[in-house]
Image (cartoon, rainbow, N blue to C red; front, side, top):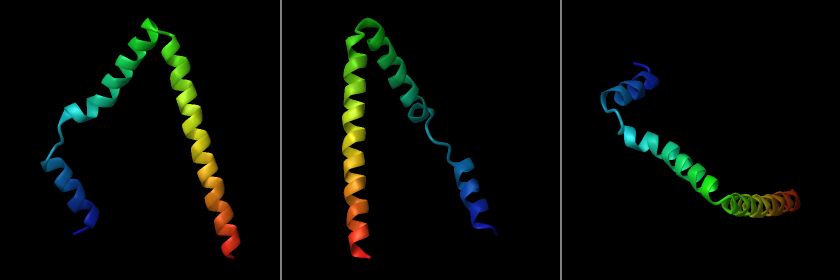
Length: 71
């Protein structure tokens, strides 16, 4: 039997809780309502996202730089 068929069979027999699937949607709705009530939250979220992306890019550049030095 195909390994993928075994996996699919297990997924069908044991359905996961729908609450976990709904959680990201609920969080986004709450975040949207918070932004409507306090638009300043949006500026904070964008600033935090840019900082996290910047840190990620610096870490990636450092990794690529180290990889280039190894060759």
